[in-house]
Image 1 (cartoon, rainbow, N blue to C red):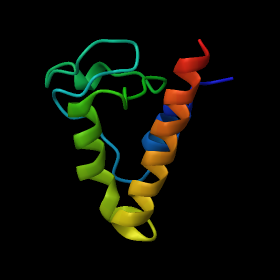
Image 2 (cartoon, rainbow, N blue to C red):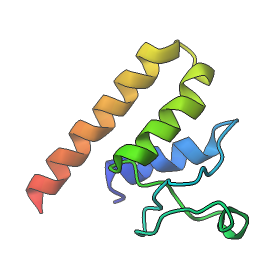
Image 3 (cartoon, one colour):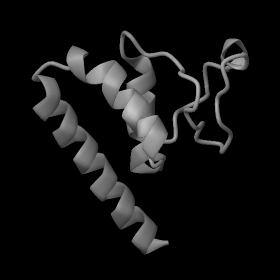
Image 4 (cartoon, rainbow, N blue to C red):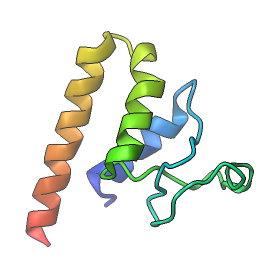
Length: 90
């Protein structure tokens, strides 16, 4: 089973308007730099536990979510809570 934040990251990259921005962290641990973005793979996912990456995702996608900011925030908080529960189990 995938960690909740990785499941949410799958949903994030499927959204219209998604793109990698410089400074975002990839789930596997490295940061995106401007010249590297063109080499990203379709399987790369953002690390939503990283504050800079999360801020970029919110700025890019919340305007496009049905229900707007509140719906986006609720989905994000739910995923973060589920992720914290999974980490406690490990």
